[in-house]
Length: 176
Image 1 (tube, rainbow, N blue to C red):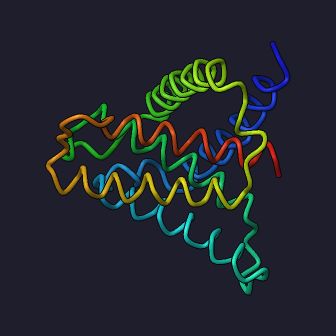
Image 2: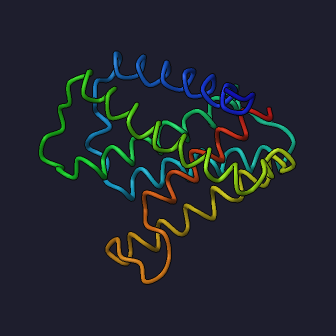
């Protein structure tokens, strides 16, 4: 396994640890979230990162690394919600939630590997500011896709945008 893949998996394991602990504290209360609510949660996290980057200081002690991790976990929650597509059954056994988390993380990891091959790890020369901006761009795209009832004419769908968001956040953590 190359260095990027190992770094990626280390980040993912740290994010999964947070997901598991939050699941222990709150259960699968996130199941109530509709797509736009998840998009807004990611927006809040990315906008906070951008604001702190722009101002060069922060007043709330929560670190930016935690915000990147939250973006990853909300992206995975979005992919899980998209797969389950049933707003009535909000309870989800822990084992099932973790299996879905792992499934979508693996698919996102494979996407990263494929893009990393084609782009030659160009992300390693990008700035933290670019990752925040690209995530915010994807958020605006997702809002438009939701406004279009999930339909696109030529562009990638919601799942692709969420996977890109997750990967940008992982890259930001690797480079931090």
